[in-house]
Length: 339
Image (tube, rainbow, N blue to C red; front, side):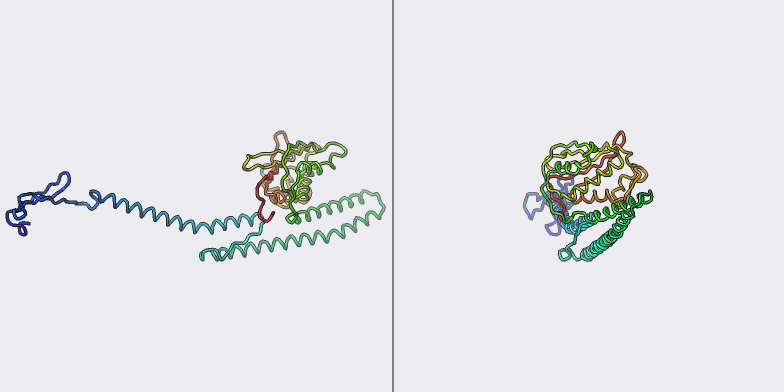
């Protein structure tokens, strides 16, 4: 500075407080010239602008990441939803044209898998229906032949009972195939439908007791629901004697009300370890209830309940017995393929 301003130039440095450089040069006048010093680039007011830029960059980065993750998760959520629908036995296809290129092959593979599963199910049902239908004719012919024999031997009676059992098994097969999916919905009174189903059982004596609370009419499939009630009542009568009760009540809140239909008995109940498996086709609670039949009765019940947007569960009762509880929603949309 002395070289530039002259040999009489004086320089002072203040380090405390705000650092500054003080210069006194006769060539510049009698006053001292103060030059502020900022040893750190973030010192003073500049730090707030830098923090503002950092905050803006962070917010923009977070927003961009959120948009990217949302676009990536949307196809995955659609895939999860479609997989659950296929697991429930509904026909679902994913739109390949509307998906990002990264998910296109996954969607195509899923659609092919769903088509293969549906084709296998159709072939299985067709085979089961064909076998069941073809066996009806020889069984009917055998039954007529036994009638024409005009013999009252015990062997003949046993053969007739066996033919009737086989005929009942075939009825169960056909009922399992015809799950009522094509049956139209009707606005029905559930209580009246229950009384209609229970009436034949109480002709000689009261075998099925009714405990029905008023519930509003709502869309139902008449034939399918009657089949479900018959299966539950027949199971209760077979394993619980004549102490069978059918109860109906309204539950839930105003936003999600539902009807609870319960069929209760006082039989031997079911081993808790088997409660989650007895709804599978051809599975019977043999160890607990001395299972009979084909093991399709509860599978039919579960399928019909799901067709109405509901659910079914079995509960062992305190004091012995079993409760089959069916929950049917009120005022809710049914599954897309059930409308």
